[in-house]
Image 1 (cartoon, rainbow, N blue to C red):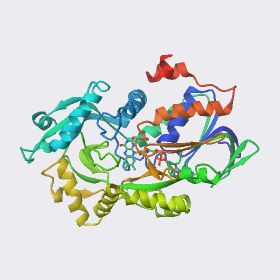
Image 2 (cartoon, protein in one colour):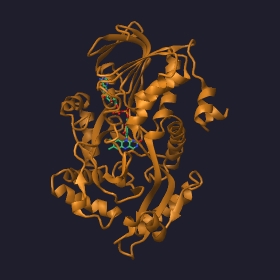
Image 3 (spheres, protein in one colour):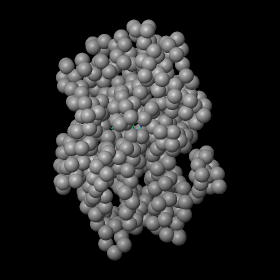
Amino acid sequence: MAQEEKYNVIIIGGGVTGTALLYVLSRYTNISRIAIFEKYNEAAMVNSHYDNNSQTLHFGDIETNYTLEKAKRVKEAADILVRYLKSYAPNAFTKGSKMVLAIGKKETRELEKRYEEFHTLFPKLKKIERDQISKLEPNVVKGRDYRENLLALVTEDGYAVNYKALSESFIRESRVTDKEIDIFFGTEVKEIKRKNEIYAVNTSKSSFSADVVAVMAGPHSLIFAHSLGYGKHFGILPVAGSFYCADNLLNGKVYTMQIKKLPFAAIHGDPDVNNRAETRFGPTAKVLPLFERHNYRTIADFIKTSIWNLSGVFSLIKIIADPTLFRYVFKNLAYDIPIIGKRFFLRSVRKIVPMAKYSSLHYGKGIGGIRPQIVNTKTMKLEMGEAEIVGDKILFNITPSPGASVSLKNAEQDALKIINFLGDLFSFDQQKWCLDTGSTMLECRE
Ligand SMILES: Cc1cc2nc3c(=O)[nH]c(=O)nc-3n(C[C@H](O)[C@H](O)[C@H](O)COP(=O)(O)OP(=O)(O)OC[C@H]3O[C@@H](n4cnc5c(N)ncnc54)[C@H](O)[C@@H]3O)c2cc1C
């Protein structure tokens, strides 16, 4: 293994984002020397771990907070990932039905309208009513008031993905090349410094250097960005998500209608990717001053990236004081309280499974992640979706949902930027990428 080495590219973070980039750089470019640093002893131990996210491959078909434009982009990226999963990681996913459920007149009207707008993009999406819903998901209809309007959009593309297994497959596949790929687990990057056009990367074990650095360390990316003078107007609102579990209540994924302002609000229920007999409900959404769930040392990291100036503080107050968000955050705080939290949460579960019992639910102890929602102090707003800061020969990615679903497509985009940073001697094999991924994107149609 190389020590004190110089690489063309150093990637920081061995979650699904960093490992997807490693895979794309190794397979589709002529970059020959790449290293990846991960502070834990295995890949994907934080948000990309199978226990810590919702395990959904998002396409945009049943996510009612996505616009048509966003759904198009997410679908294109998800299609690429499906092809990869089928070819290289067949054990990292399961497939079943997936639906979004509308309850009551207002929601069913909204969903009808959405169907008209979206069914051309998603031809597999079907509109189904009570009887058909009952055939697919008996527990969704059982015990429900028969006068209640019920409508669902359903598709067979209900992929549940073990994003940790996917990350591991990205690493495995990146090594099936003649490139020099060094993988450093248990190695924490402490500092990145710029010296004469070269980046010095100081880790818990040794120092390395690189022409280009890709920081794919979740919310920790922002700490490195700030240290190099980038993204100073960004902060992070960490929104923790927990799950409750029950035995075998649902056959496939059942989502509910999202609240427009809160992309993380409405809960869903679905079978666990590793054990389809276990149904998970969640995620909850609780603001916590942590960068990693259950890792209290990361409070210091949150404090470091908080924006302790007037506009930063005002932005946070303005965002949290929004009545929709405030009500929601307050309600979610209650969900994690022992005994009464489960009672509160049961009400949301019963929206999906009306006959769910208090005794059948248990809190998923030690599972769940942190969605690093970006706060922009210039606009004083939450930025939805992934955030990337592009610096001089350095990239910083902070990836809330659906970051895992779009990881491979994002990696292609980042690989193109890296090639551009490195100059004329380096190239991206667009033809091979288009052929392998079956991508229908503009660059592949030309
Ligand atoms: C509750 C919840 C539900 C979600 N559901 C979905 C879903 O259903 N579908 C979907 O597509 N997305 C979902 N997401 C989002 C998805 O989990 C993330 O977008 C994705 O996992 C991000 O991957 P990542 O590699 O960027 O981050 P991570 O997986 O967090 O990886 C970052 C890595 O960087 C490492 N690291 C950090 N600092 C350092 C350092 N200094 N040195 C070395 N290594 C470092 C960490 O140890 C970690 O392994 C969900 C997220 C949450 C929280």
